Image (cartoon, rainbow, N blue to C red):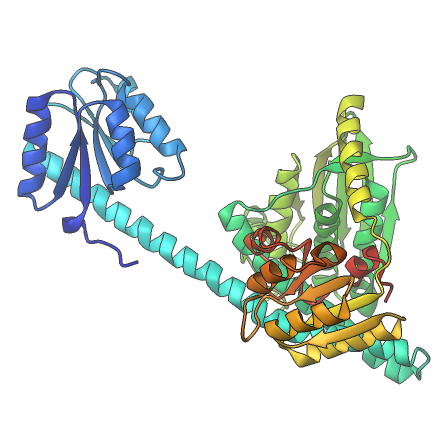
Length: 510
């Protein structure tokens, strides 16, 4: 949608005084602006929602709702919060009144009587500001679309690569060391690419405030073990020594998302390994003090310059590089760490004595403080466990227009004893489902003839719709993609490349 220049901007003028309202409207109209009016707070709220003005000239003293309250409601409503508000008043003229207005969300505050030139100058200044904000929102929207498209295009080739590698391990488990080393290299770099794609999507989620957590009672032993498992190949590849210390008391529990907590620690361990010269020392320690748990990841690596300590967690920050050295990565990992830790109610900080003297990252998280809180988290964990308990599936249909992806996954599942068929279009999927009677269907969203959502809707209309589990297996992995899939009749949503642990949860051991 093209952005409107300020001369075409729609202004809502809100004032209960007919004379004052008329005078301000005339000034604005003479300046070439379009004006609509309201004489009370309720009308102002209604017209703001229905007419979507760019700016509201809002008097404070109204007969039903005062302008401060109108402003607050407008800024709290997602449909109107982007509207600029210029509050005016002839009665509330003190500094405290202006502060109250600005704290309540107003973009500026003028005391009446207002000179015509002053009113026009302030309106035009706010409209220029609004123009910039709208342009930035448009850039942000395009960025998110680009990241989603990029992630999708990267996921598509990663799927068959990961599946083909797993198939090779199944077909020929005992190979010479050189061949196994080559497989491990492919696996390591494929996993690294998958992490980068996931990080790209998390950037979009962070900017939109859409990262959500699945809270449960989490034992930090399992979190640490998962993080070590993820980071060990990289740590060992660089010849580092990893030391882990844990408190004697068992268990150490926090209320949070186990996957995200493991991601936090894995990112810190990978970061330590990346910025430590080969053969270095890395330590991970967990200590408990009062109602908090302290997790420290330390290394004897390149350290951090004093001026960089405060910006090390900024998005896309690449601080910490030695001059003349280039490290891989997007500068996203530590920003994700900070965001995820804060979503868990904790804090994180970095310390270093300087370049060449190593660094320490310390996370502080609240322990589960009461039996009631522990019960809530345990209930969540129990429910999640029940949902994941699915009987083994034997008849499987894979639908994907990427023949390599479909065929590789089909061969892998066939090798493990399942009866698998493939389809490469939406219409083929409908025909095969009717004839084959699958118990589980993996369905891609981007098909050449019908969208996966439309295929899902048609599948759910079949007489045997309750006989199969429908899984979206797609390169589109954002939260709204998952919601669209569930709304179209899918039972679950898997992002490419397929996570073999998720297949195991369905009874498909690979």
